[in-house]
Image 1 (cartoon, rainbow, N blue to C red):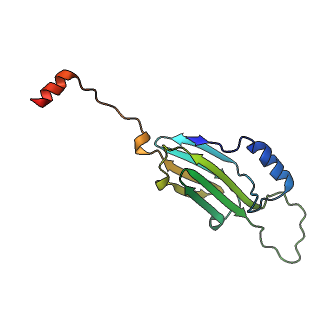
Image 2: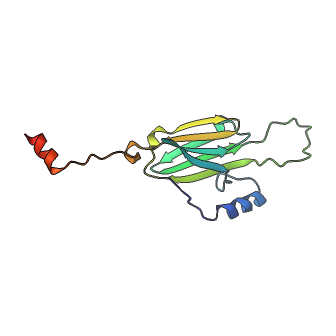
Length: 143
């Protein structure tokens, strides 16, 4: 259902971690899980410390783009940083979705730092039974 667009994602993520925070022109990757649950496809992104208004989700054809920005917390003028390990900046992920997903009905929920997208499987992609008619049955229906 999901195709990766960048085979070197892990190397890119490591390089971005070493080079500093993501920017709008060069965002950092965000960790995610993806799985099928019944008649829907679920994608969960780890985005701790992001406010819901800093999330941007777009779908164009089969390309899903998720962007988020983690801004620094407001501090007083007298505050001195002792340690800063939490990444700040822009995070982004682009995924190519299969044609079998219904991109018109995507549901997004954000709770406890996890953005969860639920994408229904399109009706045309669900398994269905095909009735087989024989020649005798067709003659019975005609009479």
